[in-house]
Length: 113
Length: 115
Image (cartoon, rainbow over all chains, first blue to last red; front, side):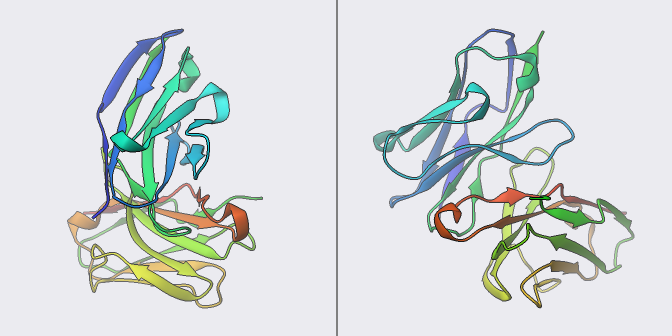
């Protein structure tokens, strides 16, 4: 069965610090990978996605993620976080095009001004 | 796009009662998904539809749960004989066809509290 593991449950950073959130998945075949973000009081929004091609993908608001197939990882990065990045971040994987998403348990990011 | 809408946004019920939630997807999105999210966890898949056909159901979806999408537009999720363990946020998402098939757009969710 597919599963997704996010290493950090809660991360606290100061503004301008660099961010890296870990995500590993278990599935032997071809996958699509996603990062979703949920700002306080808002619904889940797509941050970025990887389908194929360049393993370094760029998303909205300066976020990027790198797919490393050999490590089954899809870590999220941002060089300099802002207070407005305070949110919960979810990594997700899908094995079949258009099918269900399997989510990790989420990482809560708190950015101190 | 007006976005995915869900009603009601909050529902408080007593154990043993039936509840029904509604999801209106983004117009012309063929696929509609239901997920459940409990505190401190990521969303868990429940079921999904392509048009009116229910294509997959999770083992999490016990016999007390039923979902429909009768005309391929809005969908309803009904929980019969609710239990306290059903308390959660119920999320709906929809996705278009074609090259954007893999993008799911989520609604605000319905928060269910079973007393």
